[in-house]
Length: 359
Image (tube, rainbow, N blue to C red; front, side):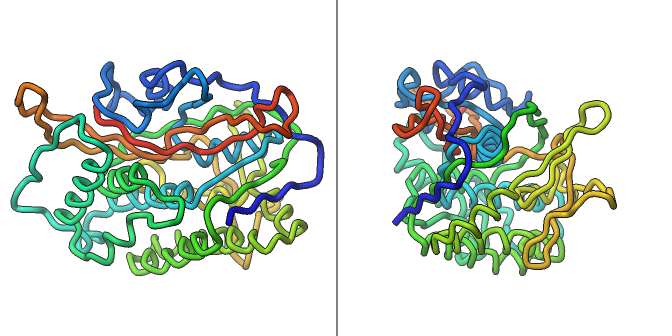
């Protein structure tokens, strides 16, 4: 069952940052994906039936890291799913694969035939089946296909579409996190959804990444201490958990207002938008965050890539005309949730949001 850990300190603060989107198109625009995926029309989406007046959905380019950063900086409560972590990992591997096609060629094939078109307004079940077929069309190894798709107790059909898009897509743009100077620091409470076995399975998935080459092996090595502590959070040792989660971020501003961050959250930022290893900021006077002998050196926050992917395919519209459409999916923001035990009006909890669009 899920576990909630409430850490000592001051009460949770209410959200007073970026306002929630008024509708689906505004939410898409808030994600700020970049010029390559701008649109004025959304054909189909995870968020088609969302009541934006009742919920506070806020678009970002990396929903997990942004929710974690804001929860840490502004003393919010935080809820995460195993899928949030897995999508963060897949989006990083996407950057690596696109920058290192030779090293990754054994994992993929160039099909001799195109995938058949799909109706753009298909149900999520039909889209999930289509994306599963697309993976089979492009990925050699059935074990890799099964490994790529989440199968946790919290996984939905929307998650299957999101994961498939992250595997198939290409990330071509970078972004900059906003850098508010907010305090006090520290997550007020943490909820890990799903079962302990889900988080153990997430840790096990690192084994395949280690077989992809030297850089993916280092990426997995950096992730292992972090994912291991996600699992041990279910032990309920509040002192150890508080220490770990309190080291998710450390930040400072350099000359010119450059934001430098350290902490284990940088494990999810191994490659930049071009698939190159993000260089650390070297300062011998700074303490380096370390867990299990693995160091997490400071990085410039502006180098953090987004957690989304996009790819093009064909569909048949209502008039039977073949047209080109684009899938976009990833960790696309977070939701501000009402918490009955919260202060400042109760809107104190953040949860990453993943989803997809057909545009």
